[in-house]
Amino acid sequence: MQERTGGIIAATHPFLAKELASATRAIRLHCGWHIAGQETRRFQRVRPYHDAVWLPAMEIVSITSATVNGAAVDVDTIDFDPQTGWTSLTGRKFNVSFVAGFEEVPADLVTLTLELAAGALISPLGISREQAGGVSVTLNRTSNSLLVGPGGADAARLEPYRLGVLP
Image (cartoon, rainbow, N blue to C red; front, side):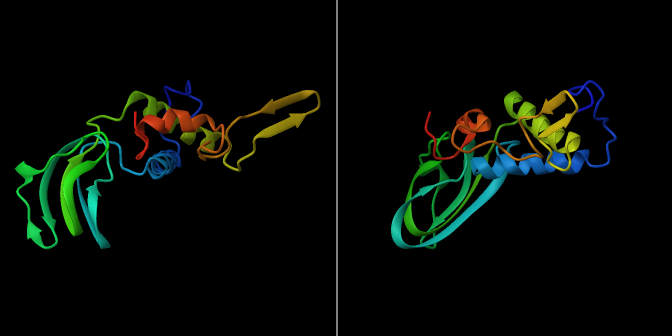
């Protein structure tokens, strides 16, 4: 952060870690999955009807174990799409462990995370406009909120990582 802001926000800023974590969480919540790094996740559901299993992730590396309706499934027989989370599993009750996520955080998400955290640190009260006499300063981001509403600038940046958005 210190390098990114030209020293305006020091690496030792007391709230830097908190704001980076908050920005990361906002991005993950919007996208619907953890994104990076590669992690083993467990996905369990019980549904009132027989349904296809879609894993809540992209960049799926492998499925490590699965049970459907209480019966173990040989993971070598499971087809899956690593980008959409689709699997060939179907059932009412399922428990699937899988590995997913980018090994490294994509560069564009690093930039967005730093922007969100910097916005929160530079304007901790969420002030977006300030004027003193004839001098006016307007910021386009307040706190670490994502700009994802209609026409929101961050929505397009996050679209490639958002679950349910097919390329």
